[in-house]
Length: 295
Ligand SMILES: [Zn+2]
Picture 1 (cartoon, rainbow, N blue to C red):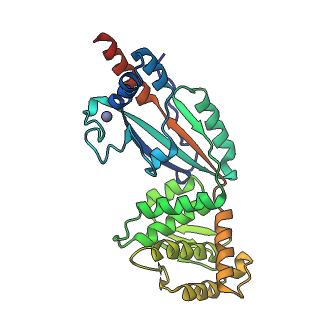
Picture 2: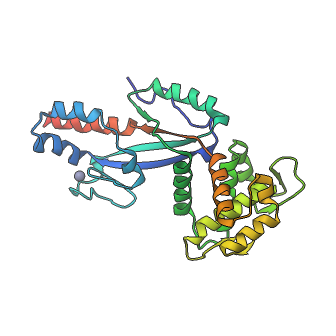
Picture 3: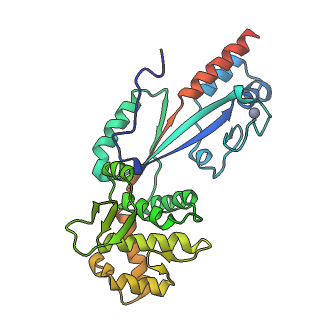
């Protein structure tokens, strides 16, 4: 049996809904744990290890524990100093799923399930707010706030989140040089001549995201409309007709802001799916096991 018989791609889904992470595992640490600490036979260790899939928190770096680590940070195993030959890699693909492409997601899942040995699948419980916060976290980590275009980068990410579509892959390839407010659109956006025109609700969402991300950073509250305090941001949103368009009651600013964020969350993904590709791991595990038997 060969693991790479059918090549599965995630191309049927908008790339903005996908995020990937790679994690390395030290097989020397792993085998030693079973054979030396637990005193198990290599065959039993191998059988146990074949079932292994790292936790989501190992991939995210929230609590990456032995024998897992990130190869980008270590050339040798940080726990036992083993060389690369002992390394096996897992690749996790996270799907932030929207009802609009649930059909494609289900089809992909069915294909992945047919390779149950290779792909470990999970669907962790998440509220819309958790999905939104995690997205903000990822966006914050990958944004280079030193770059001149970071406001533009964030704006594009928000548009992709709010309007998930495969169309963005082409548009981004063409290049978006500017994002600007337009009050004369039929839909919520229009792309022309490297410029992305967005309607007031989407433009307001962009300002909120820029504000949320930069206020926790050295730039503090920077947006397309300049550097704004919370009161100024709210005033600007009111002026462009954001609250009216969103149906938010604006008598009290903090309450209005909460409602606006609730709307942002509701417009986003509704579920999270994880697929962990174990093909490299299973291959390396087998090689190491066979070497051990020959000893
Ligand atoms: Zn190790």
